[in-house]
Length: 473
Image (cartoon, rainbow, N blue to C red; front, side):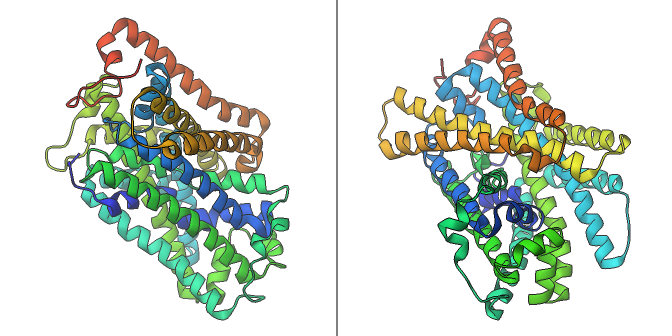
């Protein structure tokens, strides 16, 4: 919680790292290619454009939001306190679901790396539980320390994909460079909906720029710039990386390559166009990419816990700040204990770390974050209709309206393609999807209780304790 400690690059590292670009490309992009074919890169571009539209209104409102409560602060000011409480509950569910589920991916990614490099097998629970302690320690340290760690890891994971791209482009690829990925006939196919569902999930965490308001050197400028950098980088990087892997195998052979070995798609290409050493590095950097993602989400959860504790919603202890590192360390301990309990429960149930721990936890997480984005877009619309401002119709009406419509469409796409994303039964999928509205309703009920039993907490919800101001109705 060091004020003025983070610049644009630091915050951008946090939010881009949360998306785990290398892991998304090596682990999820093959699924998108299998669903949408060679037109898959456009799906990532369309998702990036949609989120860029969202970012216009989102960043315009950051200048009017004093709280570092993230989504729930925006939704409270725009849609009222009950909706804000509901959003806070969904945010806790979503960020914890994303962070805890990824311990399953950390386990499988580390197992793959150990097996590929040294032929060693370690049981997945041991890796996941060790990961909980590593993330706790990194989050316990100062925010500047975390930003430096994420910066190094982000450069490493993007660097290996840049090496792959360089090797493919210098060689010319399997069939020579081609732009048929962007032809309408290859984009407007039945599988594009599934590609968009995967693509929106790949951007999770970019909006968390707003929760670093306390640490930002100049929040009114730093947060918008970091948000635009994160969205722009991820959209272009994802689309370019998927296009590169298509060139590596050739447009006429990529479908067969995906069907034959989806998990090894990027590794095989890296071995061919760069070398065995680069494929070995990719195994290592996937593990560090996952760690970076978990640390970014862990920090986001801690700051939500800190803000809600300072406002009196969560126990006061979660608002404690470490005297030396200035981290919300008790909130971090609580989140790590929750992660430890969840990982242990999945391990004792003999669950699969990827198909169950990762997918079952991440599904309500990613769906919850997209739902919060849609609600925030609506909140931006209503907020700027209620107050005098000089932001302009483009930032306060046109783009928020477009974002609200498109994000609602994204929710429908994710739900309609949920079976492709989880591989679970219809009953399991129904439970996973229902967790988001149930969490929102719980938040609404908490708000009603607060209004009756603790009116002072309800009245000042989504305000900074040291920056009192007028709240929503």
